[in-house]
Length: 314
Image (cartoon, rainbow, N blue to C red; front, side, top):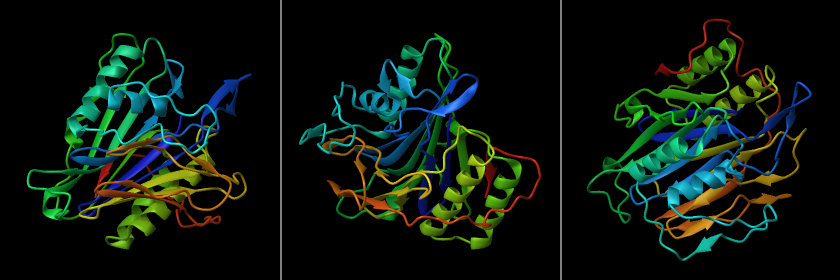
């Protein structure tokens, strides 16, 4: 299990998820497959999105992030056998996939490949481009935040549920916060909402910090959520995707990056001991990897103690 949070407002989208994969051994949870990532970044013909998942760590013997990438592209991929070896899976091949194909291919593959396994939840969050948009202008009038959820029970033959109510965010003010995976404790959730509202339209930096804090506070309540987090940011009208790895200095020395599907490149997850992984040019987008400064223990998110909600309006 895991926890992914997504903050969506008219001007930017920030998604944050923990990286911990677990398995049950002798009735207790133990870490599993430290190299896998739970996020796939996709640059499509009309979208730039992060595809995050909770549930199964592997599908058909492949890490779920790799499986998701194969479904989106419609062809098999062969990442390096040594995790983080650094070479792209593919380079120079045009990847023409639009947002509708991203959603329908994942939906159909979940129905086809899951049979009597754990439930899977997938969130697609980022920006989509409407008619009139061009890579040269990046006109924000033609770009809109987007959030879509897909859920499958894991039962053979069961349909994939696609939530149609969250396809597009066109409001001119306010925000929405979404989650998939582990339930956020009531006090953590309410504290997060209070802090976000107090920002009155805070920056992506501040929102990311609060989301990471909320996930780490949740990790104190459950062994299936970790304290190392991966964040992805999209800003309306800006052709840049920022991927930031926030490590818990008490637990992790390495820096990780997610699976990336660019317009002309496919890059597997990267692992580095120190420093910042390379920039990926995926015209017209620039994908920048950063390692966020370690966050100390904090009381930013307070225990408020009321009823939990999985989603709420701004």
